[in-house]
Image 1 (cartoon, helix red, strand yellow):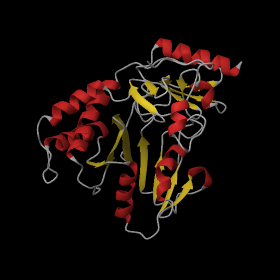
Image 2 (cartoon, rainbow, N blue to C red):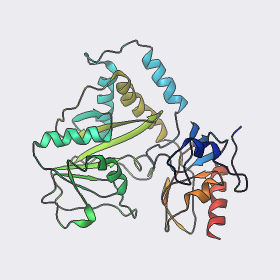
Image 3 (cartoon, rainbow, N blue to C red):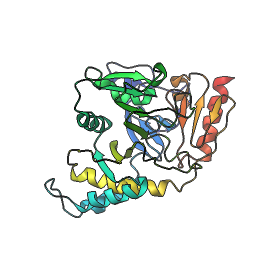
Image 4 (cartoon, rainbow, N blue to C red):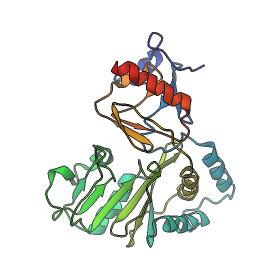
Length: 316
């Protein structure tokens, strides 16, 4: 039975036996449920990484599982016809974003390729403002030129600008004379910063990147002009529709409160002022990556207390 470890008992023997190339903080996940991870060595972790913030509430949520099972019971599985799930999903996302055109993409890269093809140019220059976005982009390195927003003075030569609302230091992104194709990526902060009204500006596109079920990452691109995209599979159509319903429910939930002198705290996430040692926290049943903690409405008061205790020990 998995349990929260203590440093004197922490072991990754089985994980490291099966992983040929691993860092000290690598482990093999046996199960992910709610906001907890369980590895094959019997260790349980509170997840404060949440897939770098892309998961808002929980892993493999049972509510969404029920939605999808009900949809699958329709028996429809053809790609050659438009189906009610895709039609309803388009209507739903139009009402959320107030954009005329909605396109669906099975990944971040597929969305980006659709934009690149619409330009009909031999060389493409893309600017980005966070390492999170670059990690999604880097597989296109041989084909596209990328530049970090902080390294440029003007967007005159930029074909596509991709940005998150907040920069790496959590300051708000701002830019003047943005390129024609400017996309705000809503994947880590959209449902966390709940105190803020969320207008979807029609001046640029909005890509809402979701991980609603069993690791499926799907994207919804809202824009003021039409963008071609491959026909999504039947299952993806269900995710686009039912995922949006699920997130509507989540946006009404309360997030836990967190404060610590070493962190700058926001609603639903917090930035540490120095780099954290991942292994130190794993040994205490706390999983985090980098310097940002992400919180779910399902994190309990006990989870926050255990996190606080680990942080106090770390910084003592």
